[in-house]
Length: 445
Image (cartoon, rainbow, N blue to C red; front, side):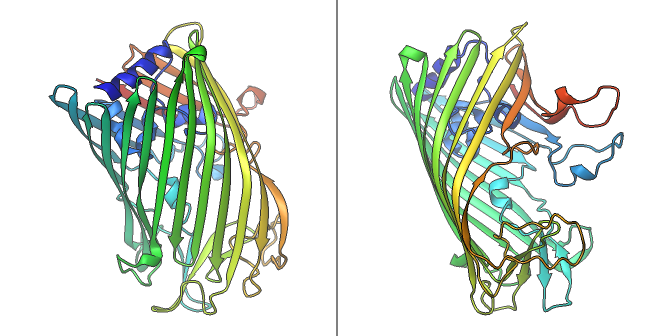
């Protein structure tokens, strides 16, 4: 299989460094998988499932949940959001194979970020519902490798209807995310491999207007990247582009990305870096507000048949134009089965915010109440321009730096961990805190 040989050759170039990338690996070395060929890319391009046949993948969980700050020192708390799955392949002839796979319980954060934290049903004084967590959460994959062309299809379903976050029956508790996409990976020659993928997704919540084919809640996306081999650095030049057009009740977003990356293998190690430019435009209607004390996003569900943008269709807008530079490096040290990783990511963007006079607490408003006092009268009543950057050190997957390690047992079982960024600055005699923030693993057979 020519496409498979392209990936195998890349893995050989990396030496003993793991060719499989988990979320923990990506988080530890640059917090960006755009310029890395890895198994995590099956969620962006399902055709890549053909490049990693017969393997299991999963995650023990993470400690980056928003409720982690409420966990007391010494208190037992299992990690949040574990998931698992696998891909299996069968040869059907010379240089041909078919693959099937499934992932259970994975949360697609790209889709889930459009869910509100709270849904308010009815007029003032009516009930507030904590947005339920979808429970179906299933990824299904089907693909084939035909000579030098790999193709794949993917579906994602995350749904909850009728049960609120506290476990009580509530007919107004509803969230749904559905995605379907296709992709291909074509080996153009011994030095070039092209990826193209795209699809549609649907996001909806609250009790109103659940018609499946409502075009107002359907969205689309497309992605492409090219791996061009460069013998001089034993690596690749990687141009990449993506577009996401998202529509949700009372809210929409347009996101365009264009970037260039490079990777290089060296003795017992691997290095990559990339630069991405982006343009992002968001709008939110008067049905979307923010609690300035907690930062929670609140969706005020309109009456059935009314405009989800709000009674007057008022919209707040926010657009950003900027760039992100990121890098990652990993190297086997001491033993061939142990690898250490470090990476960084820095985003700088120019922002223009235009507020709606009818909504001075818009979800897009950057204002946050830091006083901690209840019944705050903070409002966001000014439009303006400013610069933003990603978080510096909040421990999230999007902050400034990452650090981690991996264990490779006989090129079969590979375990990766993200290390808590304040680990080396703690007083070992004081106790408290977590040593690791995420643990992921793959097993190939």
